[in-house]
Image (cartoon, rainbow, N blue to C red):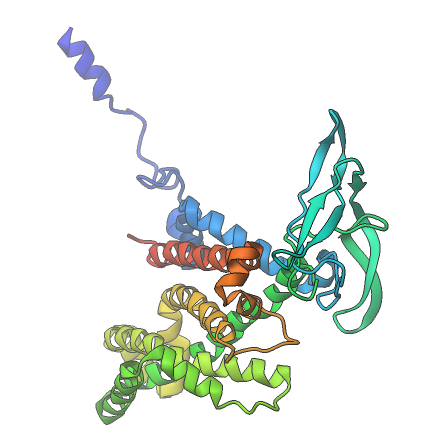
Length: 387
């Protein structure tokens, strides 16, 4: 009996060995050994469920950026004088026990003379259906085409303030959607500046070494020893107040990029120090390749996956930096709309206590920053696919 069990457990295939048909152990496919490094990174990254979900969240946010005018129900500057600090209107599907298309209940308001504030109440007797693929406020799509097509619009003769309004009666949801374009773009542009500086100075320090390395390391130590937030505030306050919003945007972006490159430069330097002694680098030197070609064509591509992971983890700090500066009134200023500019209106305690919906711009900031961190964590794990 024991012999039979042992024979079943230790079965040996009598067929002759064929190396062309045998699959690699633990992979189930010969394609594992033939795959490029980017394929290996993708295979390992997609097994990280949280990072993959975060990547889809970020893809959704950035896919909205080119179409914010179409998605937002109102123009970002449109004011509703009769609905100052109006609370959010909820979307409903059921009215008096009947299923209906999505609708909102209209507002009626009265003025409380004792507390000197407007009191809004919902008129639940008059459901107003929301319109989809409709005509609304006019805008210039990508600054080239004049149109008024929107994904969804308020009811005819009604309002639709899904996240409430601000002190000027502007729809907060529309302004958050418009603000996504600036807040998400400033992270990408800022990391491009930081990436270029980090690769340049880190590449010089890691490959050349010697006095060049010492000078760059001392410069990095000086920059990292300065308090980050006071330095941001000082440089932002130095921007001329008469600059246009576009110039202020690029000024803030360059400031964030100039202060974020030291960490990336040190990562590049440490990698180059270990890679410059490899045989393929020595072979390139013996063949007469220049230092610039060795760094750009041989060294940097060998750890580009690590650089992408580092850059992904740096973008949230850019977004938070812009948000903090705009919140303190030293970053972007109206008429530019960003999430930090919107949060600037929620600085005083009275606004937060009486109108808590003014804090809603904080929600997309938290979601995007967490998504970048989760995706960066997955990329960092997948950057070395052989482990």
